[in-house]
Image (cartoon, rainbow, N blue to C red; front, top):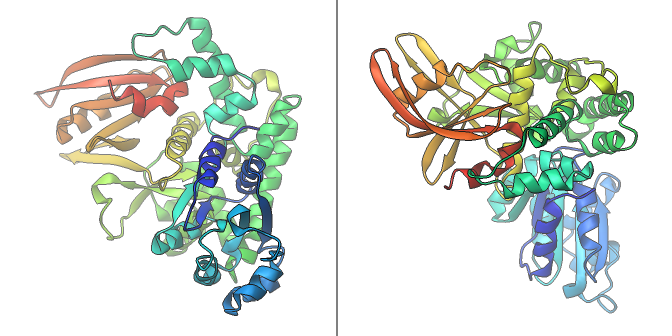
Length: 440
């Protein structure tokens, strides 16, 4: 299974690095696999140390005895050339307090290539230490196409220009795969199950297992949490995908303060991330509303108790939360666009005379805010977007829907005032090319 992050990691390994690389992401997204795959292309001695498997040995790193630590790790300075050695420390989120000790140790050996992997909580520590970092999430839609062997369709996406022509057959084939991804998601184990026999029953069992393992292991990673509340909040978040919601609505039986606390814990382990109003992006002030992006669309359905149907109906299936799932699809692809940057997403909200105009995402491109509206059905109404553009006086917006790509100038009016802006409309399968398609 090909992952785009492997190329980044191989490039990092070929250069002389004075500081470690921190790879972060949720459990079971493929962090360990990507490292192992990348080092196969290097003619170097590879040492893998799992903190989860060797928890009792982590005290080595605070001993201050560098040669003893190297020996315990299996590195013999009389045999191994450190400039041709890769040390991989996995699962460091188990003891995040040891992060500084590990960094102090490995920075004594600048010629040693060191990779550290763990949950998103490690990303904050990487920033504090001034280290490079790499985000790993579920398979993106492009990676899903590669796993499915759809190289010709992927080439259409990668080469698309605004003056290109995508045929109706090509468009239908790509949208068919978008609907598959919506249900299957991008968790590597689930995608692998789908590529072997396309059995939704096996995919469903795999996703159920992943969610069960998440909930079962949270306490091991995070101490004495009330895992029953944590589990209820984890199951409640997918019900509000794409929606601006107050914490107290996530679960009726859990207090708002407890919901907020457990949503933060979900974010620390990578199971979801909060999407903030871009107007408050630089503020520490608590906001009463938020939007949430779950780790994966397939997992979100599993968390809702969705029973996967037979494979023949997957491309025509419309769910009650169809729009929310397509917002989830877009959010997952946006997070995958820049793996060397923190995947922080924003939405937009503006109001006038008690009328609220909400846009699903807002991205920054060349210091300009660009609102994104997600449309999952046949409706062409853009009233909320028109209002938002009127209030924010922005020149460019994006619509993501099920139709062929097109760009045009919008001329309309809001409350008697003229509104004009450029709209670039793309189908879901082109989200991965969004920044490129905004450049011309």
